[in-house]
Length: 382
Image (cartoon, rainbow, N blue to C red; front, side):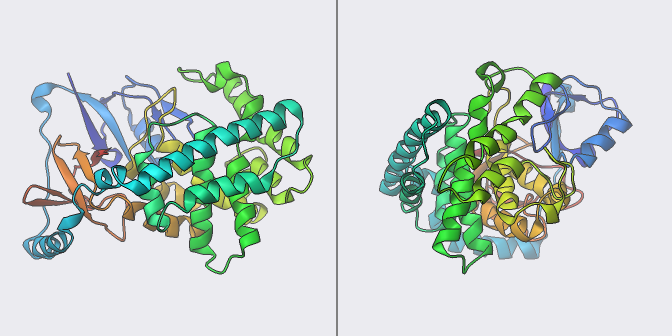
């Protein structure tokens, strides 16, 4: 028995899923070994699930493909030729002096944040906002621009520490989104947004470790306990002096969704502050592309695909689309493994469908945006 990854649009009844399938906010949709029915397939599409892994007989593992038309192939070859020096770009990033400095500053920031969280929650101390912001700014300063920061964050995958690494990641992503969508944002406003990303999950300090670290699926009562972190976070932060009230509000509202399907209040777009809407995007992207105790990191192109489908109604498109365009650029010239088991390189982004780029395998080019193409990116190779 083999495992094959397919687009959800290609799923059919009686297929058997190989893995647990989760939504963008880590709700389990169906467990592994579920036999697909027409109703389940419809639900997967409604939840914005871009692709799934199914069990197949070894002899039935052939996969159809569609290559780009000759004219477009020539165009892409010229693009690749002009950009050939960027092959294995992420490996170069990881071996660079800049990444070494970024890595050191990042780990120092995470360690300092652990101390801050513990002192605030356990000892009722005030937060030194200036100090922890300087830590994050020091990490950001190691990158040349937002795209370079995204490149280096890719290289940091595998350093997940549940709350602390995630918090630093969300702070940097929120800072990046803020600068993209508000080019004239003041230093003070950007600091509030960055601090909101840094402290958005502080309430998880009040959730029992046996739930946060649970390797299996959460029960409904356990999931309801996890959801209380937004209330704890708000209560912790709103009681602190000299902290902009929007920081506590973001802690409360970063799981709200623009269509009213979030928690704790089921708020809709106009009821959610702009900083909470930005942090919601950064939080979801980082959580889904990072390893968790109960699942491996989800392929970034699946995450981007989810945002393109489900995200259009759940997240603020004013903030989401500029972020997706920047995020997908970070994967140009990156090696990927396709669902055909071939290894190729992302060479061109499809502006109308960021999650399905053009991939070069040897001398061939696959346009994954073609409706008849059953190939998807299985994994980003770093």
